[in-house]
Length: 460
Image (cartoon, rainbow, N blue to C red; front, side):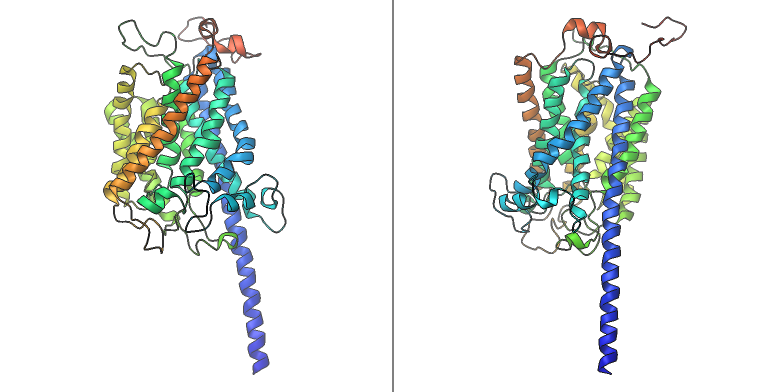
């Protein structure tokens, strides 16, 4: 009898070990697949920005976007990933209550020369997590890039992209998108889909840069009224926006923590980054409802296909902070509101003399703030961290504080660093280059060597 029980116990242990291996492989593959899905976001940004540019600036806009992506990879490897783990408590580098933060922890897992930051046969998880976060960083930098097309210098843009993608948003993520973050621990901040830590920061960083960069030549008349500078290929821009939506399924998938042996310290079931429970079902319901609401809201206000597709993105951002919480009709209503406010908010920005070429400040910044505040309005009292009664619950005041912090984390560095670059002559191209076209003056090949015949007219 004892031999049979021992044999059964050994058999159960073997089955459990196999199940753990299978579960670990699934969870690692899950995050691995979010990486190429998020690359689709960058295919979308590439098409979106090149289509939104005039013919004379198409390739210059594309080159800028490609470089933003490329520079995020090494800079996030060398210091962005370390910042995320080191600074959840602000300037206090000691470990937080969950003990997955602080100087010692960051030095152990995120310095470029430690075992977790390279091929390690005993560890499949670290590189996959790093890769997913690197694509978050690249997405944040690309959000800002569209606002400044057709007049920014490449070197100045790259410096700004590195600051935003590998530092500014990472600090926001450490504070509000981390179980040890001080905004979470002290104020119950909840931002599942990064409406604040990615979109708000990127949108207001763009605003800070635009204040110093100035409008494109010909955008405003002497009396301050704005002229429409039309996209050279609106269908290409609309296709790019749809590709961004496709890629955001990968982005939002990667915001969910699925059970895995390598991070069993955190959860044994599907959870947010705060450890609170959620399912992929909530994403399926609410992403689609927010997407549809955003399109319909923008259509009812503008009838403009550009704003309709921008509204799709705004609809998802309006829901993003609470995608794990919303009942689908509420997600639709939030998405509708995000799409409806786009054009009026962008028009208000123009009246202040700001030339945002693709509406990035409004789509990501303004709607990002609304998405953060919506959690405080509709989900107050929700636990900020699973199983820790000592942590503050979600509240409107906590979300408002978080929104203000995210605005400042974007606006202040965006303004100050672009001001320094402006003083150094590295921010804006010369008026002569801008008028002639950046493809002519900065790029060694032509996008349309045979020209484009528009309505029977010769190409410019």
